[in-house]
Image (tube, rainbow, N blue to C red; front, side):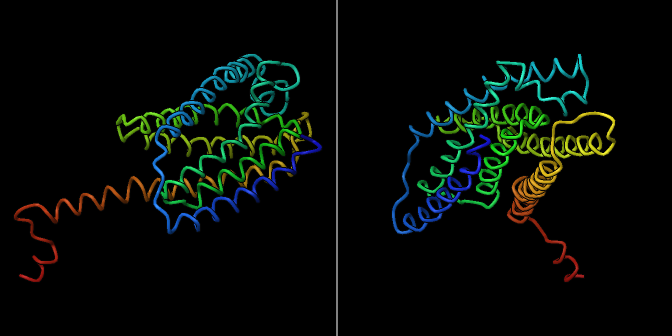
Length: 260
């Protein structure tokens, strides 16, 4: 990865050409259903994420219990000393490339492609590959959190593709977990910066990495918060207003004022 992590820029460039070129080609064509393939795709990613979480989370918990927060942020033992966690961290890094395939389904099924979606995919791939090339110690947090959220998210998508109807609340919980993930990510970066500035302890993370990570996590938080508000809060208000306006015998407050 030290020699080849920058290849991620080429993959991301090809990804952008495919998704936006694909949207242009699909504009005059009927949408594809792809439900069967989508079931398999999401089930595979859900299974992969669940296994990855169960193989990396124990190492993080062990480090926090026996070595403390500083070790979990500054010492890359999860790659250098733990074969299981190291392998699944490596698989996590590699998985960011095939995960770009999520967007192909959106394009072929002619669903809305929002900025958050493709921006998130591109930046996660580039940052993951860059961080792995540096053996960034704080990455153990990001790997475990991402595996955890993806375990729930892809399981939810798989059920939806299979025509099951999981409670709508789950989608809200997934977005809320993503927001929590961003807050924790920012907190970890702040702690890493404080360790570096103190100069009293070693911390295997570069200031450049902290800058990239902070900018990335903060931008994610803003975008996910906007998505959460628009999708769940603003829509509820709109639905309530629509229900009230369509209810029998409803009199609008403005109508009352005019009448008086």
